[in-house]
Length: 97
Image 1 (cartoon, rainbow, N blue to C red):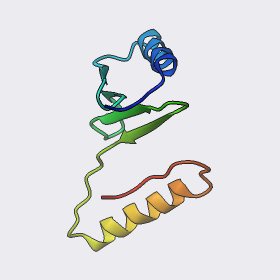
Image 2 (cartoon, one colour):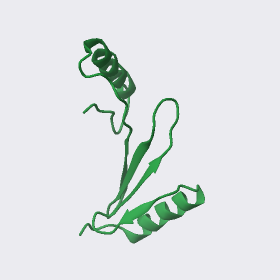
Image 3 (cartoon, rainbow, N blue to C red):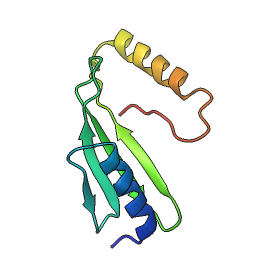
């Protein structure tokens, strides 16, 4: 069972409710919110995870972008995009799996 701050959890829940995010679920065991969002621009959806800690929270967005892994050119373009997107970020990063 994850330990998390109930006040932080409630503040996040209220924010998500006020901004009308739909399908938001909170997992008490993991101490995290999780929901899918429509994104557009060729991206089908994004899976949002917000982990609530004892003193803070972290947010992760999983956004599947399909690239032909057998195409060296497509993989190079995506790797360059990720490097450019990460440049200068103070916290967090984009990754390719």
